Length: 611
Ligand code: G6P
Image (tube, rainbow, N blue to C red; front, side, top):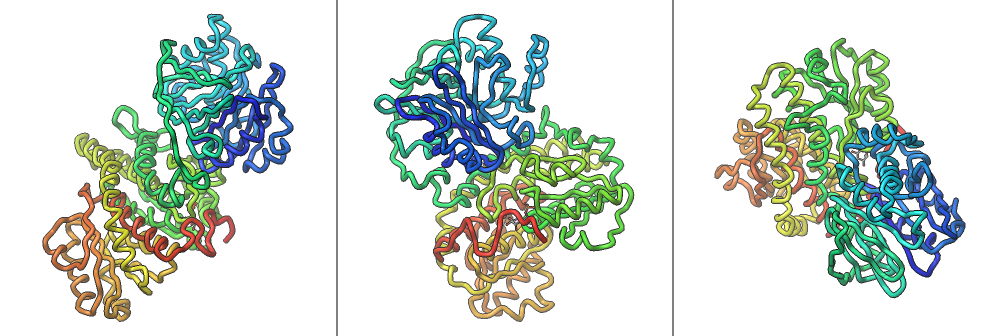
């Protein structure tokens, strides 16, 4: 999830590159860099941290004179955030410079090959390997940059958007693309390159989209496209009308909606990161079948939405694997004399990897000799570094304070853990195991189906935007989802809401139900539907208006709720992944209706690094 820009024309490239990177910072924010060619020589500047560091370091780009250049803002995948790992990367003989977005899966194999030919590397990135591979083919075949790029494309497995400059051809930028986005904007005497339109819309409205496994050669006077066999091909110029201020949100009004819509991809990418030949392989996370077999108790510690993921997954772990699972608020666990059992596993869950309480709980467990795994989104974060093993979710940078796609990715990581624990404990036949994986694989398309209900949810949100109290009720996993639905609503809409285990209502909370109080009933767990319906009937008898989020399709549910949102059905263990989607969209539209700052709710921060 990195951002790429490029420029070749008659203006100074540096300031244009930095401006474009500013619009792409949402794609990555751990380091940035630019490279410019001046009098046939490369000058490169990189800085760790926010883009502002690079802007300061290069005097807004002016310190690197030249009218052709490339830039990059990074969200670390291979190698921690550092200046060495930041792009652009330069080849060993300093004849090729490039930036890359994507993941090169066979980089270890390519690295070994290049090492055999005497190549040495200064970074831990897959990108540096790709750039040196291009240099290797350039030298070996002496057939020019386009040949070297296409030849490298044949050898690279994975995804890439590459923008490459050659010392031997200082007037052009070479581009290659597979499964990672890249566009080229053109106007009289200037060509702009970017990962997406917002980065360059301020300068150009006419853009080319490079097709998959195609390459392009950009120069000031225009661009030519080639297939992998170096045959020139035609691509259509597309006129784009976009409000330049929509920039970094990729056309969405708020990051939150953009991130909601990215959930199918976050789920797919997280699952695929551990799926090998149809089997979940957690060996690299320190959870080989033997290691899992030895675990007799799972503790989960986290904060906020990550804790809600823990809540949902404890049911899944206990039900599938028959292993006791206990979720704790990290802020509580850190100060308790916790009697960790010797063969236990602590899983901490954190998007940012920097939440102070979660980090403290992790340290406490480690000090007690407990094996630890961190389900974490940000590469190289404190929690990722300190846990015995990070299990990275692949949600990409999440910017909206209210988490959505990271929550969904965390659920997937926990399902994988639960499944492999169950398999290691001999609780699943091979068919059952594969069946569950197939169910998880069905989540992204089912989330897409729920997106079709956006308008209906918006109408429901409009109608309920003036609510002063909302209650979410459910049992088991449905209760865990209610906790998340309630948090989403309260944090961005400032409406008081509470999630209650439906069976607990009668112990006090039901006294708060008045005429027209909104109650959201969540219904997915077959053996609990009837029970929750009884609770719905009870609140309705006291005047509540009930919105049902239902997976059962049962008549009994339909006739007892005032409004119904049906979600596609899935194995009940994985229901949280679908039930949460309408609740996120509902909360979003309530906040929008109230005219609130959806992405930056009052008093909150994305990453809570103090107690
Ligand atoms: C903040 C965020 C929440 C998040 C929680 C834990 O409160 O607003 O969205 O769930 O912190 O953060 P973490 O980065 O550890 O997942």
